[in-house]
Image 1 (cartoon, helix red, strand yellow):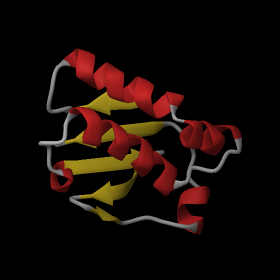
Image 2 (cartoon, rainbow, N blue to C red):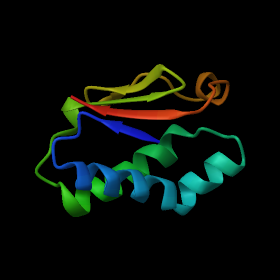
Image 3 (cartoon, rainbow, N blue to C red):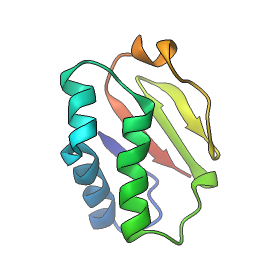
Image 4 (cartoon, helix red, strand yellow):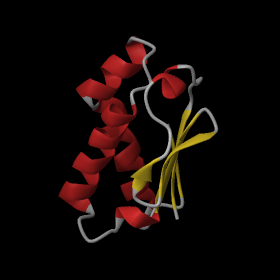
Length: 94
């Protein structure tokens, strides 16, 4: 998991990364080789809701394997198309 352009400190960005990889749902997605966008969004949403609730998801872009899955507040790649995507995960917040 790589976090870039996070609207906070480097420490907060590291905490987001740890929150994602420690999420039970995200762990299931990784161990099952199932890059489920909902599990990723849930992990990020959980962190943002707890620690960065003032931030707007309309400024967030998420990618898996270099393909955008979430852009400016909307999922753009879901379902079977995501399952064929290779890891790693890159989360960009602009």
